[in-house]
Length: 286
Image 1 (cartoon, rainbow, N blue to C red):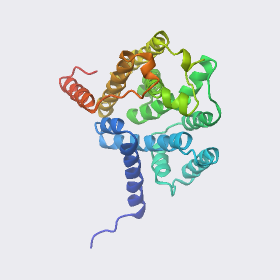
Image 2: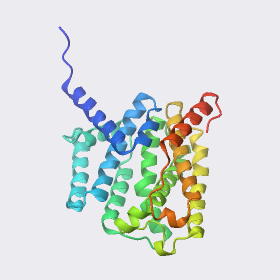
Image 3: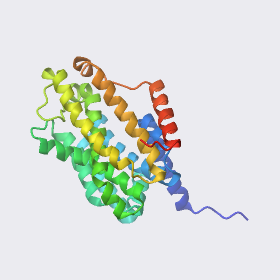
């Protein structure tokens, strides 16, 4: 007689599958890159993305609902899921499994949710410290969650790559800020760059912001070179995609950046992927 599958294992499988499908639905570029993680890492990364995306959708797209109440419920539901070791919400269920398996500090999750809460109340950032606090919570800690997974509880490696991982998180987030200027400023009424005025956004202003992001990318690159084999290629592909997007923004006039969302074409993404694979195979790295 065939052994009956353990019901909780079946639910665990479903939970991670839903996180995977969430990643695929909301970010085709990241999902494509994630295929190059080893299978165990890929599942865990999808669970982190699912959780982060769920919170982000609440604050950015659930306009006809009580966003504050929904975000508070998400916080409570996650806390209960962590304490009980299970959740009827599959995304929270898969995420709490990953948090425990890779010893992801609760401080990272609290800071992420703090930045999501800020999106409901804060519309502009007056000082660099305020902006950096927001970026730490919305992006840097996500990079650190991922690094915890990549390092597989190797604390020495994690500590060595801590700063580069944060710089990569910052770089990705700032590129998103530039790409989404029209949506953030005109539709959501938010500005993440210090004392940013869209009516004064010009080429000089744009290049100053890009120089800051390029510095983040340079520091992040040093850390990517030391990542474990099971995660390095996927991170290289994501790095190259965002760098390509930044370069496209750099080549686009400032007035056009605030008129439309800059994108990397599918053909360019394929070429980027092919080049990254070739370099990796012949051990040229990043």
